[in-house]
Amino acid sequence: MQKVIVKVNLKAVIDNAKTFAERTGAKLCAVVKANAYGHGAVEIVNALSGVADCFAVCMIEEGIEIATAVCGKEILVLTPPVTKEECEAIIQNGFIATVGDLRTANLLIKVARRLNKAVKTHLKVNTGMNRYGANLSMLGKLCKLFSSEPNVCVLGVYSHLYTMDEEICFRQRALFLQAKKIAERYFSNLCFHLSATYGATLGKEFVFDMVRVGLGLYGYLPKDENSMALRKAMQVYARCELTRKYSKGGAGYGHGVSVKQGERLSVFRVGYADGVLRTKNNGLYRYEKNVNDCCMDVCIRKGEKRRGMYEPIMIDAQETARKTGTIAYEVLCAVSRRAEFVYEWE
Image 1 (cartoon, rainbow, N blue to C red):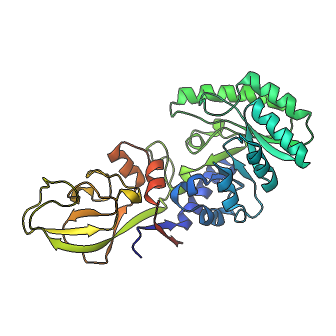
Image 2 (cartoon, rainbow, N blue to C red; image 1 turned 60 degrees about the vertical axis):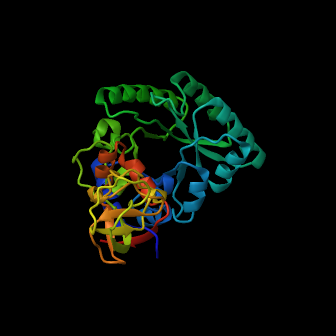
Image 3 (tube, rainbow, N blue to C red; image 1 turned 180 degrees about the vertical axis):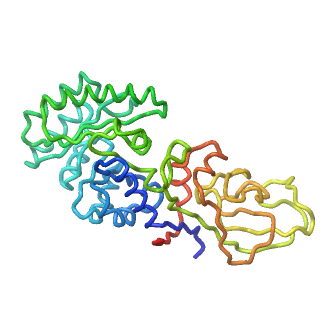
């Protein structure tokens, strides 16, 4: 095949999940949005079906994709529904809807009544992220509305830390505790969860009943630290298509490349359409061998490699991110864009 190859170690993902579960002692919500951060959602869900307590996705479509693989476990849709069709899809598929405002709440109630079916929800609280979620005054109104609605089943309340500044995180935690008290006036047996991967490393104060782990499942922490023994699950390989002797001209698009006459060059079948940065210094493994900016489908490097040989181009997304001014999340989601997946158990 001519595709870039992404190798994913499923045993590493399972081990990472167990590490978080054992460290926190809480329920584990495995976040598999964005095709499991580029690792392949269905395969990751299948691997984690015996470890994770539930799963989270960004969109309804992602939930439908993994619905069979979750083996009856809950799927939380993190993006609140906006239309009647989205509400219907959530209800019909038995997903958990995120609700953080009265408009969403009333829309869900209306659709649930029309279908004569119950809708499961987690209430989202805004503690500072200012994306989705109700402020404390709005939360009370939501709870009051839902508490008298037989078609709505409120299962949990959650929020999201927006920074790795611990002082700010503790301020968010204080707001979340206030939200917890409000919700507990109306509902019992709720699942409270504040922390994603980073919060799960901060200690018991941030754990509550469940943690939502995304990046950590795949071997990375948002903060560049070694506080947990995680295994990186993904490596990416590209194939050498040919080697040639440079005579004159350019090497890829543009002129002015620093290549000597007679120097050997290798052409690799990977480019910016495969999710790597176009620039010459694109942070790929051994990027210093790049002769020029990547083309859409090709990267030209100094040195001779055997034709048909696969060479690693990404073995550490954190390292690539550091060299290119981004974060590991973006690298992982991008480099598997049009790849062939190979799953291993090691």
